[in-house]
Figure 1 (cartoon, helix red, strand yellow):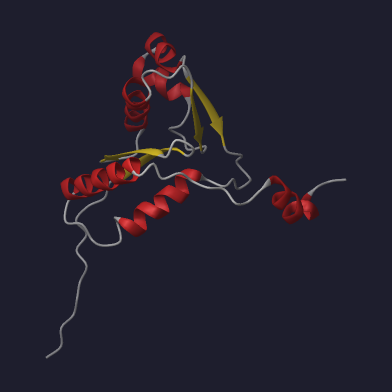
Figure 2 (cartoon, one colour):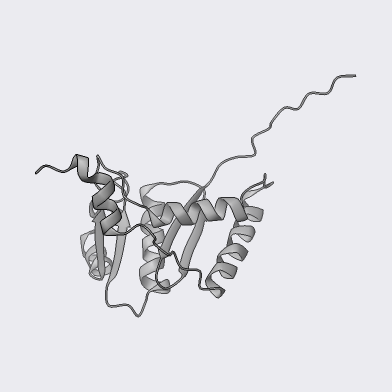
Length: 162
C-alpha cells in the first residue's frame, strides 16, 4: 500500500517584532495581516503601553509601504497621528544596502525555538509566541555584537571610494 502526504494550509498570519537589544526585551504581536492599520496599531501599542514612560522611542524600520508617518495620518487623522508620534523617531534602513538587523536575528531565534513545527491555528501560535516572548524577556536575552566598526572597515574596504 502506498501512502501520500498532502499539505493542507491552515491559513497565514503576520508577526510584528520589536527588539530592545541592550535591554534584552522584545515585543511580538500576531496579527491576521500586515496592513497599514495593523502596523499603526502595533506602534500605538509600543508607544502607549510597552514604552509609555519613555521620552523618545527610536524605531528602526525597513522601507515597507506601511512603515511611514503618512500611514498614521491616514489611519488616525493628522492631529492624533502627531500626538502619538511626537515621541517616536523613525530610522529607515537604506534601500540598496543591507544592515545587520536585530529584529531578523530575533526572528531567527523565534523560528528555531518556537516556530520550528506546524501549529494548528492562530490561537495556538499566539499562545506559543507569547510564552516564548515572556521567557526570553525574563532571561533578559540581549544581542551581543561581535562585528566591530574595524571589522566592517576591513571587510568593506574594497567598496570605499578613496
